[in-house]
Amino acid sequence: MANLDSDTSSQRSSGEKNRAAAVVHEARGDVIADAELITAKGNIVTKDGTFVAANGESGFGDNIFLDPEVAEHYRLVYEKAQYECRHVFDPQLTWTQEEEKRLIRKLDWRVCLWACIMFFGLQTDRGNLAQATASTILKDLHLTTNDYNLGNTVFLLAFLLAEVPSQLISKKLGPDRWIPMQILFWSIVAMSQSAIQNKTGFLVTRAFLGILEGGFIPDIVLWLSYFYTSSELPIRLSYFWTTLSATTIVTSLLAFAIFHLEGVGGLQSWRWLFLLEGLITFLVGVASFFMMPASAVQTKKWFRPKGWFTDREVAIVVNRVLRDDPSKGDMHNRQPITPRRLWDALKDYDLWPLYLIGLMAYIPQSPVTTYISIVLKSAGFSSFNTVLLQIPANVFHIITLLLLTRLSEYLKERTFVAMLQNIWTLPCVIALAVWPGIIKNAWGTYALVTVLLSYPYCHAILVAWTSRNANNVGHRSVSAALYNMMVQLGNVIANQIYRTDDAPLYHRGNRNLIIINVLSIFVFLGTKVYYVWRNHTKEKKWAAMRAKRLHRQQHRNWQQEIGFQVRSLDVLAIIISEANISTYYYSQDQAMQFLAGYVIHYFVLVMIV
Image 1: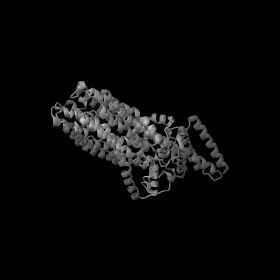
Image 2: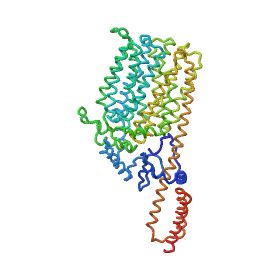
Image 3: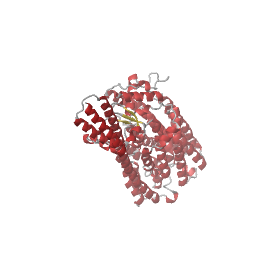
Image 4: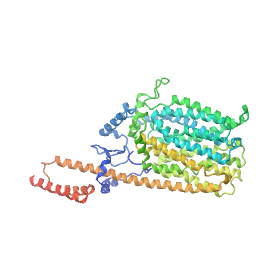
């Protein structure tokens, strides 16, 4: 990426472009040390993998590899990394827009759809505890509200702590191997929940579920990034997260049916729920071994001899992704992340604002999501109706999520669009805190929580934003895990907001949600300010790099022109130019010495000529 994606899409005027060199004096001469490659055409590749176009515009452009030096540089990078798709890297490859559209549709059916199915498996086993509370699990296991909170906290802490280790394993084995293994392992634990008898068993199974499910989402995001460009990823992730709500709809209907098995085989209905839904996930895990190719060039298998793509389609998939982000080929898909790469990703402070958003943005909605079954039962709804009444909120949630993500891509704006999530929920949590009709007015309570839980979910925008701002595959995999860790840490905090001594109205908890909601909005605004400032400083540094190279080129050209006639006015112009450039890069004493040398040199030349 050419700069931090700060969601600003404003176009610089020609006057601003022409004034780019005017900021050079604010960036001293050591900026050139950040450049790994400066081509004859003036394009720059920095040591952190950033590409800076010669014309000063941010972004990679349609095909940065048309600069032969850039193409050769990355060809060597891919060869050194043993990148699995390097043999189809072709800087000269062209394709039509219609070809690309057909290919994207094929990717959506083959890649994105299966990612959504796997997420269905995750959410089925991760979310069915909330449905089980609509049955008699709390009563049968003698669990209090605080015990229920503790179980959720144990799950989230285990989930959080497993994120980075899971990413390291995934990068070593490959997401196509590790993800199906994860699904199989956690589905077995999910089914074993049907046998728990007490609080200890409840907490142990929650811990194992968290350990085995942790890292799944960053793994999937990494896998999707192998096939989609950075501009396409947010929309695909929005499809991915609509699966969360779609799963809740499907499993709500499934739970409605399963609850009719109460007493069959001597088992309570919630035990049948864990057993049958865990079995569904197990089947998804088995199928995933066959449905997840390692990369676009590795879709041919013994059970799929023709693969998913033609040779030309393979070349298009690979080259369009590399032209969007050349760093996607700097590691192969079975290459482990070294401690150095891990440390570099951890100290990438430009991603910290996004981590802070991940920590805070989802807290205001989380307690209501977790407690909706308990709240609706407290309002007087039956177990069956409690399950069914959650469906409308999930339908609206899907609609608002898709609209929000498309709005972000249409406007090329992330911060303000993502912030709409917390603007939406603020009046709702205020109403939860101050409205006297909570619980007493059953349908009013239902309407309020339905509106709140229909909020436009910004998660897809933020995950894609984090991926976009990571400089290479190693950073991308670690940053995705770190972001998701912060989200889970926020969920841990959220699970401690509604407490037994505050039930059933949770006025204290809702007041805390108001405070966190307002703080989240300020975090969004602070992130916007930070990224605009960082991009401004980077633009100045890149302008300095280009001016430094221009200065050196002028010096070489002058050396080549010795022996040709130099007019006195030309000499004066060059002296003035050198005086300006010299003061940008050297101390005052150095600049005066440098300039004096040029004056003597040029006047001697004039006298000779």
